[in-house]
Image (cartoon, rainbow over all chains, first blue to last red; front, side, top):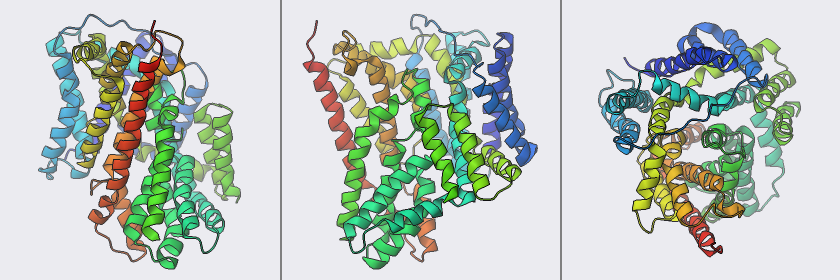
Amino acid sequence: MIGIGFVYLVAGSFFAAAAILGTVDRRWSNALFHALLALSFFAGDRLGDIGNGILVLALVAIATSGRMKRGEASTAAAPQGPLLALALVIPAAALGGTVLFKQMPARVDPAQATLVALAVGALLALLLCHLLLRAAPLSGVRAGRRLLDEIGWAAIMPQLLASLGAVFALAGVGEVVGGLIGRAIPTGSIFGAALAYGLGMALFTVVMGNAFAAFPVMVSAVAIPLLVHRYGGDPAPIAALGMLAGFCGTLLTPMAANFNIVPAALLELRDRYGVIRAQAATALLLLAFNILLLWWVVR
Amino acid sequence: MLVLSGIAVIALGFLLRFHPLLVIIVSALLTGLAAGLEPLTVLARFGHAFNETRYVTAIYMVLPVIGLLERHGLQERARTLVAGLKGLTVGRLLASYLLFRQIAAALGLTAIAGHAQTVRPLVAPMAEAAAERQGAGADEDARADPERVRALAAATDNIGLFFGEDIFIAIGSILLMKGVLDGYGFHIEPFHLSVWAIPTAIAAALIHGTRLWLFDRRLARRPRR
């Protein structure tokens, strides 16, 4: 059955190719960084937990050495060929593939349908680009390597933050924070409880970078004991609005690196926090809206 | 309480602009030690989680296509497209993209767009071209900085995704809510959770849409040279 393994094979092959091209271009640190990523994607399951931990330490050591080079400036040619149509191949394949693969659960893992479709789309688009644009054989991987170097070590930050979340969970950070917030609420105030829950979801998400980690903690600390049991609120909207308040927090934190930091690198912004600055006003107003709606639902 | 030391490390480390990856590693180690775990146990847990979350980093497999198309002039082509659409402004372009992203995400199609797939190659250059036509970048006004326009394009993608996806019943967050509530004895259909994402989705469209409209107005109001 085709599943996540296929996706990792495609991604790993790109990292391996980037490592080889990096070696050829004498960008040693970048090449080593991408070679380690390729190793993780090809053989991560066989390295063992400690082995993977050492791999992470090696990646971080290279990243912090300051020896990784930025991508070289590139010049774009005058536009020719069906570029916009080719740019839509990946989104279209992701859409069509997801729908199609869900119909064939025996061949493609339904849980991974979208990622598999995305990988197929990336391969298909690359093939079509080479055929229709008559690009030199390695030019695609070379251009991809340049973009990857532009993103640099920020590429693995989301994965590292997710792993930090796992350590936080193991250490019971959530319960401690939840307990603190639970104690901070004035008794008898429905608005106070709604505020603590909504704000707590957002703040905890800012710290963890992920509303999923905050949700079980805030539900057990505030939503269930106060909003549902004491004030008789309906659990469905309380859960949904709390999660959405958490999403407002996601828009405000560098911890949500794949949404906030990686795009800043990808769009070559000088300000690492430029994306967060651009969405902060929307996030704060929406957070206020969610808290008010929460209060109105429970009241 | 000691386990919160890791959070302090993160906050201070990011604030003082230490290397973010180093900050994360130190925070993990300190949190683990404060909770009485062996350093090797922390390393193993971290390594295990890193291996389990590789799918987050897999998205870079689209970069060869994006890079190749850009070298053949994709961004220029996207700009030409904007030039042909009279009356298209940054605000209108991004507001349309916001609605498209929200509706697609509400139908469960979260991966058909994104920062690597659509924002960098298409939306950001189109937005920049529209802003230039509106007179941005012609003076030192920080608001009209092309960087701000690109950042706004990325922000719009995030907002559209976050406040659309929860309307879809089979998305991860809805399943998590159902699972957690099941644990407290409340058995709720995913549908009842996803309807409650609709008011916030509308509010997000109105709030962000208004901000985009104001952005257009600010561009128009600046004295032109």
